[in-house]
Image: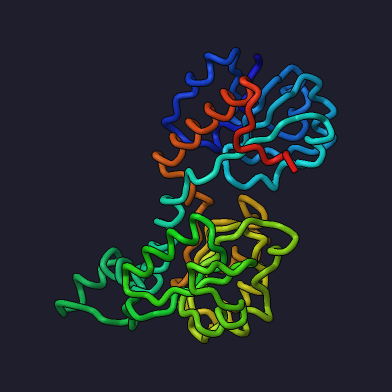
Length: 317
């Protein structure tokens, strides 16, 4: 069996891909352009991808391809219907990054609530040494305890964020497409109006694309914090940038973008130097432990496929 890894550089350092060798030959590419893709997958039985887009045209060049392993939970970069039509199985990995993404979400919330950047910059830039005072308490910052933490999405990550927020003393509310009896669920309108911190944890789909736009931002509390660790296109990015510039949002943090990496023409390019903005390079999922866990699950997915079993299959209706 020929296994081809098409964008290894996006998977980070420290992974041992020799765990794939018992299945057959393993070929690794740091990254693959659309022009290079047809030739590189022409003789592949299995491909492992992270960000590479798989379309119907790509599949037409892959006569031997039997299995696509996505090194992620989200698989919106794969045309699953086309894979189904070509008889190609598609497996993702679920739950591997729950702790890592929840950790960054809470860190972002705390950093923005605490106005931490302003204080660390004050010391780093020499202001503290020159101030002649033992402390500084400007700009104003707040306790997170007692705040309302709104969560859009109640999957594993959303629930993990909610548990941590509750442990910090927050009132936690959720909005989900389907009401969960074990969670305090409210309408999106109620969540927008009541949340001091709003965190997004939903997959990108037709129903979630542009979920938080100009109208939704207008309903949020003045000074509320918005955090997006879902997908960039879940928000109207131009509308978010406008809300930050206008002072409507008290803070904004995101790890995801509709175009990655985002270009100089992207709405967020104007926000890079804002003290109340945190922009990270799609790294929430990638704690070392999470990536090791993900690779281990991919090995299990391949083992199951070889045995004729269905594990983590997203192509099955």
